[in-house]
Length: 316
Image (cartoon, rainbow, N blue to C red; front, side, top):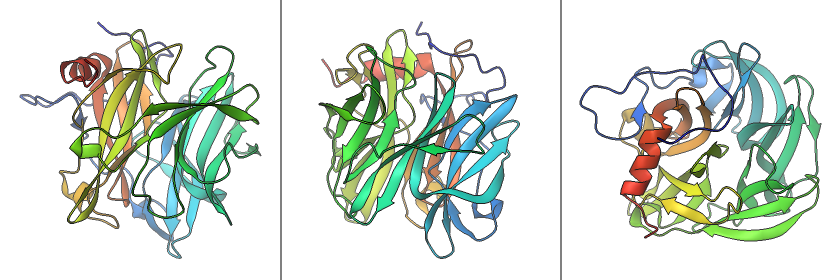
């Protein structure tokens, strides 16, 4: 049996797999958990990040307001399902990720500059005051995802170099830093291989450390005659050299099937940005943007996901 290496989350949100359901990831029956109605003047609330905080949970949420500006706000929840979002904008940009490193909550997001998108990094201890660091790359990049601890005494960041538009390509790379200011030693991680992800791939939630390696959920994009379709895949990266892919599923784990995933501002999108992982039970709760309109949730276990990856492994 696989084991999650990390903290216990005794109050992790959870719903048992439906009887007779065969796939490794199943949706929360109450989806979507966050909609535009959660905040005044929101056009949509979607790709967002969540972490345990205090006796409950905190998050940073992508809110596209009615002017269609991209903003990030903080939210709190006791059960990680019902959320109260603040109106105060902490940063401009989109698609945040969060992780706890050495007592600080680090935020990475797609920062907007006059020259294109880059990866912004900031930290907080209380979700009230934020310290913004230098941008990790400049420009153009998206899907900047920090690892939750140093590896070989270096911070690690997954990124996807891109262009200034709706990039019709994209591979995942990894960058190293000693101080969260200067980034280098860039390593190629993976590129699209199968049809469901053939256009581009990008890292999703903070990688989950397991005794098998780093479990990385990611999104893959198919270009069809009707446009982009975003789905969620998974891979296992080497624990000490995370640019090495040990196992990788040849098919998606979750794709747009439900109405809230297929109909919205951007149809046919499942975009994972956060995952809560309980080391005691092996349970994982995944948060994903649905159709660029709302936040939805799905569940799995570390055993089911890793077994599925290995059963459908691209790496022979």
